[in-house]
Length: 375
Ligand code: SF4
Ligand code: FES
Image (cartoon, rainbow, N blue to C red; front, side, top):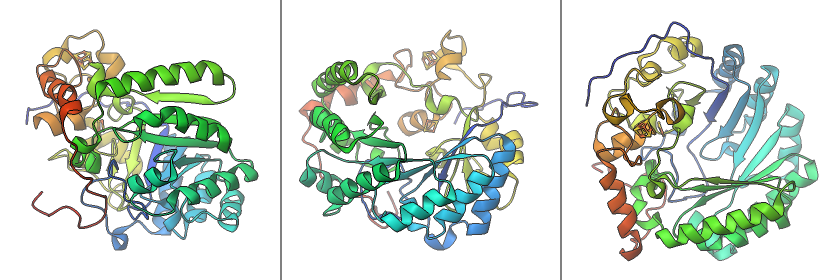
C-alpha cells in the first residue's frame, strides 16, 4: 500500500447527500449487489434512536438528500420514524426498495411521515428472468403492485435497473416497462463491480457488442421520451477507457452510513484495508466528516501519484474510484485501472475483451453464509 499524504482539511466542503443503509437484510438475493460479502447482522444495527439522532446530525451538517437503502429498508419496522426524523431535519427522503413488503397501509404511513419519493429496483422486463436474477419467485409481480401503489399515492417514482450480461439485451423492453408503469425516471446502471458484484463479475460482465446495442437503444428512446421520462445511463467504466468521478470525489459531497453505524466515504470503502472507518456510535458525524483519517485519506488531489498527479482531468474525475483501484491492483492510491492512462489499464482491458468468449459461471446469490469465510 502506497503512503498517502493527508491534505489540508481546515474547511472541507459540507456534504449534501447521505446514503443510509438501514439494514443488510433483504428478501432478494441479487448477484450484482454492492453490499459487502460480510453482511452486517441485524443484532448489530443502529437502533431507532441512533438513526433519528443521526438524521438530526446530518441535517445540521448540511445534508439535504438521503437515500434510505439497504438491503431492504422496508424490513425496518421503524422506517416511518426514521423518515420523520429526516423530514424534521430538512432532509428530502427517497426510499430505495425492491418493493417487497410495500402495501397500501405501509406506504400511507410513510407518506404521512414525510417520504418524498421512491426508487424501485427491477431486474428484467420478463417476469421469469426477473425472478431468476433476483433469486426469489414472484418478485416481479410484487414490484408491479408496488409501482401501482406508489403511482396511486402520487409520489415521484423512479425505476432502477442494474445492467449486466443477462439483461442488457432487454433494455428496450425495460424502458417500455417503465413507460407502462408510469415512472418519472429510469436509471439504467451498468454494474459496478464491488462486494457481491465483484464476486460475480465473470457471470455479469457483458460482451462489448451488447453494450453498443444497448447504448444505441437508450439514445433512440431518450429522444422519443424527452420531457416525459428522464432516462439515465450510468456508464460501464470497464469498457469506456474513462474513469468515473466516483461519489463526486472522496469525502467531497456525500457519506454512507452502514447498518452498524460505520460511516464511510462510499458504500464499498469498507473493502479498503487500514481505513480505520469511524462509527457514529463513537464520534459525531461532524467530527467524522471533518477530522477522521478515513474521510481525509483520499480527499482532494494531494494524495495523487502516477498519471493522476499531473493530469488536467484530476479535478473532474478525482482519479476515478479508490475501491476499484484497490480491488484490481491491491493499492487504493493508484490511478483507477478503468482510466486509459493508468499503467494498470490492461487488467480491465483483458477482462472486457475476453468477456464475450467466456462461459459465464453460475451466480453466487447474495445471502449470509454463501461465501466461505476464507474467500
Ligand atoms: Fe482521471 Fe487520473 Fe486518468 Fe487523469 S490519469 S483521466 S485524473 S484517472
Ligand atoms: Fe469507493 Fe468508488 S466505490 S471510491
